[in-house]
Image (spheres, rainbow, N blue to C red):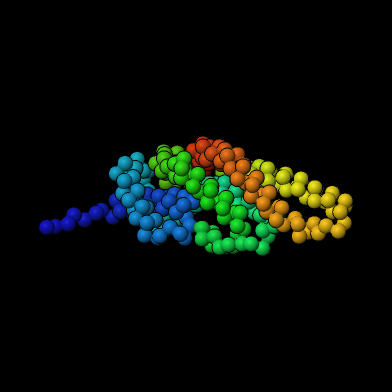
Length: 260
């Protein structure tokens, strides 16, 4: 039985679609970590590319398949996924930033663990809050936003129209500034209670000079912070849910700015 040969132009179009899908899959926080097996990521990328190809290939613009322009197309498609992943990663970075500040204030400055997702040492509280954010992201089907945007991106930003010279980079900087504010909001309740705890311990140190406030502060701050973290999980979930719900608008706006 003769196996029909795939035209080289069709295969090159498939590679362009595969590159963009690979960028999107690599941008999803769950799949971007080293904890996810490479076989799963590669298989999911190829499966989605095969599903997208019959639908997306007829609408693709005319593309030059000369080696140099074709390589630039592949690189631009991968870069597009990385930039979109960065816009989403900022939310998780804000969570990690706020939790790191909490960890230092409650006395966990030297208690670090290895984070497989970023492959570096992070604070214990940051690891807990990062896992909490990922589980919430999956619970509200945040990863489905990437799939919807991946399909919609071919209408908003066809291959070859990728442009970072407009308002896209300032918008990304604006998102980064917003994430610092989110990190402060995320850590504010615990920091306020720890500040009050430090004030009370300072008053006790003045009233009872013989009291060893330094040793007493460690168990009090750790216990108080853990209780406040448990009590404010709903508040943290509300902040994260708000950011995750706005992901669709954020990524769509970013894609529109990349097209200018």
